[in-house]
Image (cartoon, rainbow, N blue to C red; front, side, top):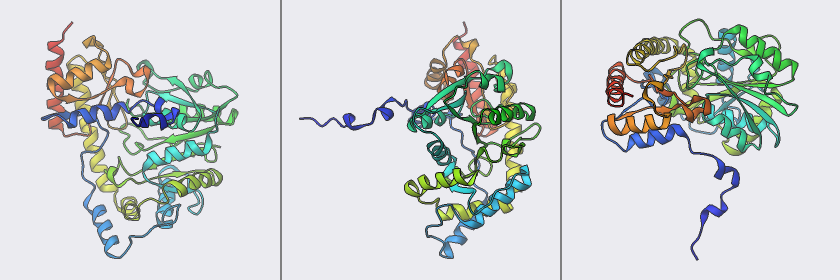
Length: 391
């Protein structure tokens, strides 16, 4: 009798689609001479002083486990940073949890808050993990679409229209992946008032907060009455080019953070100490290198948006993160058709917009975390592709 392993996989896992981001990344990895604008990863190397601090830490014998919550020195540095940057501080002894990347922080936050039957508002287009984490926790993701005519920003009215007596939380992600949209303070204030009125928790993924190019980022936890009902997620991957270090954090009410720590304790134990030491260095001395990277991203942002518009792919102007989200209406193709054919014919990898939700159909995500030379060549190839498929 042939063993059928699929019979033992849970129904919840079977129902999950594979990541649309990784699909195109894996396809591109199998081909030669591909220019990838697909994966949201800085093309910069982690600044040397941060790398060196980890070497020095290991040489001094710092290779052990840490507290489940993370090194107190790092938790204090995170609290100090948030207080200085956004005017909202946290008790490092019980309101800050260091995690293995922001992805883990998101997962344990949702599993801590969501019981079977609870509903969670998910704003799309969005990062692929949000809906999946809600489903794996036994909750029901309730989708609120955003659209280019409103700058891909959600409104309090949009959210209110989808609330029920089972709604437990709202997941926000601004600056946004994949659109690059940034939320204005006035709109966030109205969402905050709605959350307080309906007694909801906000899970705010602010991993791209340092990559804001126009105006300033508003941290929703800093708004009146929102510190206790916000789980603030952030990390070091994007702003400090530390994706492979897998280091993030969550801040919030001590009871929620305590619940998250329980899951973290049993599944991850603690984030790697060497990465935690590097994160301390990044927070204390990484500002100059970070600003240089942000300035470079800003230059690339303006370049790619101008070029995409010039070749006929109408592009909303992103003011945060490092993604452009152009419309492919001029091609007459679906998002997946466009991405598959572009990769096959011109060896350029981008991600179909519908990977980030149904309302992303008709768009593709182009990461400008690549050199200007690569971006320029990629758009030139896209122009040739459009010419070959002109309607």
